[in-house]
Image (tube, rainbow, N blue to C red; front, side, top):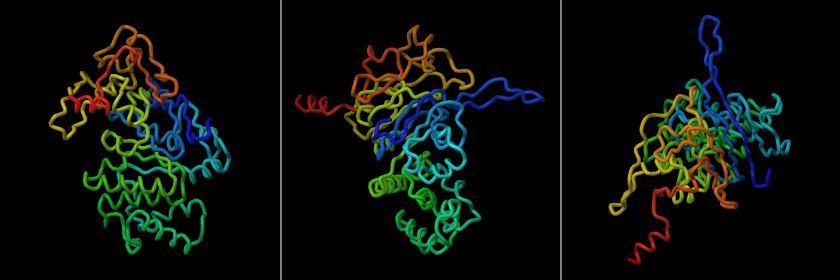
Length: 350
């Protein structure tokens, strides 16, 4: 594990049992996450995108063991024990680890207990980990409220008295209470109005710079992911199919599914002409995935090998930090979502 890598994941799987009959016998599995490989460098934001049901949220929760992974290796560079395998930690080890890893949930209302005041909600991690006394916890909550852009005077109010954006700021304050290193952001702005999304995104970026945070940012809005992410991973049916830098993904996609996703992004440029790629059919059933590449039934470039062999996530070119799982990535010349600077320059010269 390299020194700059904070989290390294190999072969992560999460299968949910399908039970039927009077005795609830297991008759199959929903393969929500099926062999995901990824790594997150310290201080960066890794965006994770894909259609609903592709396994993004399950991946994020499995990394923190909020749901137990079925298989895989999750190595985290911890302050208390050096490099640790999250799956192998006992209860005491997980209690220590939870001070370094946190999560911001998607729904800013249901993730906050309506019966608790803001002060009790934000101070709860401190209480659970026996940090400080009541006075010091109150002082810490005041500090956190100001950090996320809320007044300390509202600490005694309850979640229903706040707007969606304010509630999400409270959720962010709670996640910061223990000074974590790594935060899983599970679609933290998807439930907010567009005008509020930018405010929350800018707040998260400012906090990242000030506190040295590392994010796994899960989202389905590709324009939001482009704005905040250093690198982006694309998931389809429980697998990672492309992983590279934000600039490289938008200018040089290597997987047909990525090309289709990017073609759907609207740009406010009347001179920009781009074909929208409409995928036929729907996402396959994760309990009965098609053989070979799971995307082949919807892929317009599919060949016989795509229907027979599962492509592995491989590096496109040594040192390029661009990984793709596609049998034909060397042959295809996929369309980028927007022209590169060189293309723009040539167009201006004409």
